[in-house]
Length: 424
Image 1 (cartoon, rainbow, N blue to C red):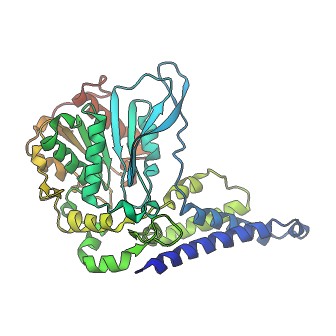
Image 2 (cartoon, rainbow, N blue to C red):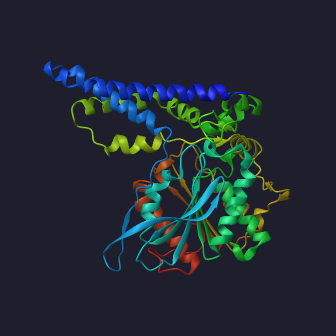
Image 3 (cartoon, rainbow, N blue to C red):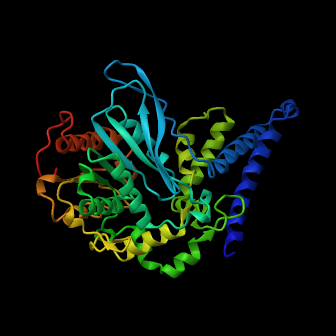
């Protein structure tokens, strides 16, 4: 089967490096080496520990790690349970249920990207919203674990998943889409606006998404223009190997994606691992230090179905179907101009080199049926792509603005900051 051997070869290389790391760590731990003090023994042990952990993380789904949240009402820690609201072959809708706490008025659906990493990439975003909101998240599955018998999954299927999730959660919902799913979430909202208006969310916040990739060029958009679809399929698509349940499924492998991610900043990543080995050798590294917190998430990659990846590149980036308001779902053209009641806000980072400023705000011009009082936008100074949904910029500036926007348009609690109509 085409490229199945290549997939297994990559997995074999990963497995071998994990084993070599474990072997080096175990060998350096023999008591006999303690008879002759030598710093190289510690270096070998440190190399082994760091290498084993790094290569093991590549095939493990990270834990959410959100166990408790403090309630303002009683000042107590409340246990957080993750409940599955809807289970589907390619992704679940999960709810972070805070036990013993009264339900929050703000109900938020956080649409996670399907772009190489798990939904846990939004861990800090979820944790920051939990004290003030009922939080639901789209938890996408690793394509390697989905049997071929479950069929295809492309951007139309993704959009219909979002439609189903919104329909089940009801109209008192506030949707926040981060990065890749922004254009498809906008399309899903427009689909509901025409097909089932009563199921529309109250607000829609789009964060750093490529609504119109041509509005501001980046390395991502340049790559999309340079490569043909035939070249992309030949270079990126493989079939899942015999080790996983999805054997034979055509995918864009997570390991291949990771190699692409890391090659963009190879020197920085190389230095980070070299420094971590030295810290480990000196006994200064910790299980949850800054290096491990970052790379435990960064290295944990998931396969995407080939049809989802290829249709995203062709229809969103090359053909600009969302930007031209020509997106079709299930044979029906979606008209974004049909959105008339859902308040829409866009958030961009001034230093975003993945979805540059201008790409996301294009959504507001597509919402021709929406009153200006229900439109808002924000560009965060100095923020890169990751910073607009996690980190200091999100915590200090963007999160309060998003909650204010929700409250100002959803009849929720008193806004944290007074928001006037129009773009902010």
